[in-house]
Image 1 (tube, rainbow, N blue to C red):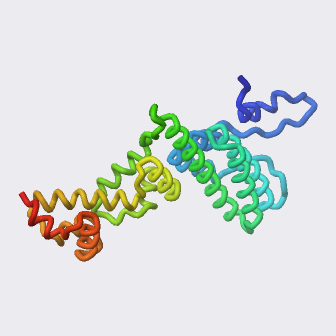
Image 2: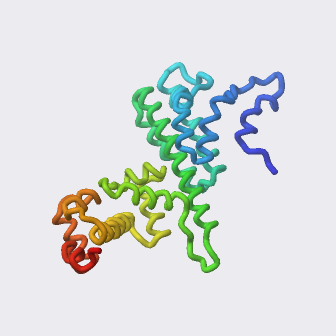
Length: 255
């Protein structure tokens, strides 16, 4: 089995003759963020933010900004290699690398390059995470070819059930389960058959039914406690789903 390219890079100086200058290799501690990127570990990358921000190497230009840009290109290339090893598609990784190198050209200050460097790292890490999620979902297909629900989507469903009293924005659910909002929306629908919004609505109505049947809470308390913006919104949504108003439902089924 061929040795991973980044290990070859790290020991490249041992392969050169004594009469040739040895390139400065990346120090081992500075490689830590790349390994977190390869695992799709966003928390690990954020925990290494100081190392990411301190990207260093040979001084390739006397101009500080140009030198930082040269180092950015090197780091982005390395990030793309690790991302591919983590499961990201080759074409996608190369395209993302080129995108960030293109964006780097517009940076006018060292701080702007540093900021873009962190964004680049997190973007690659999220893409690796999404690739792993896709692979995991594919592996979980049952004999009938119907995909089972992946761990992240199960976590999203659990988060929704525990937070029905809040506004439940897609970006907040995604943040809780470490998935980008767009990717969460796509995977959720593919795996459950529901949109996130429909699932939230149905869960709220299901709990409202129980509260109407088995508690003395007022309609106002139920509406506010389940994240409906107002009584009228609660009544409208409930009637659309159950074909009766909450009050009629309680009169019919209250125990």
